[in-house]
Image (cartoon, rainbow, N blue to C red; front, side, top):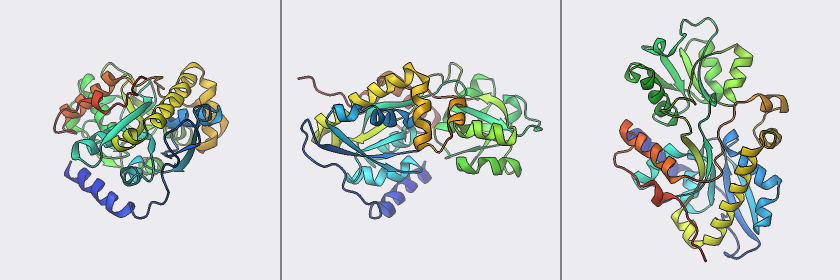
Length: 322
């Protein structure tokens, strides 16, 4: 936890000055409002691109300017200083930790993605002796970031399978480098999310040991969302509400028709159409459920990723009715 806090503080100091942009523009009226969104090239953010493609933002009187980022934590300094208004695909675990540490005053505008079967999986090489969850004991598993959503959910799944997660070692390896680490024997298995899971299965013949997206312990657990700050929603409540409505419409479209997601993925996630159609997608909740976000926060508390219990409902942006 100390390392995570130091990392966030360091990134704020180093990146705030380097991050360029002007954040929001215009008043909080009905039209000509520009919202700057830092977005990750993940399947989690399909709703953002659907909303743009279908004109949902335009219908709400909004213009959206996208700033691509590789990790949501990279945009945290710009969010804090108001140079970006929203982070799309923000990892809830990282930002709930930032909220507790006082790094920012978080507000969640809309749901992004939730766990679904095969969206996150543990993979090994074809000839690996690891065949089932208990075989991970004493082994090293790659995760994208230590002490984050991957280890949190995998630990819960292992416990449900009767495996002591404290006997599994984790090593931080960026998603794009996991295949090489697995091939070279630097790790015994990788805990990977889509689209990387499908890519590794195709290129390496990687074999699934554990489905990290199913099981009562983690099924439907929220993993990412559209995140902003208390300052933004208080200063621009109408724009925040309009953005929320547009994303919720897009999430409904994503849930109602898989082809809607398949059509937008190649435009931003660097996937060809064939690969996009083969992916195991996450859930795209059409509305933000504070109870599910509380479920995640409570899991974090139980696992030591939070020191105190957070009230998730207080972090959810709820527009005032006229």
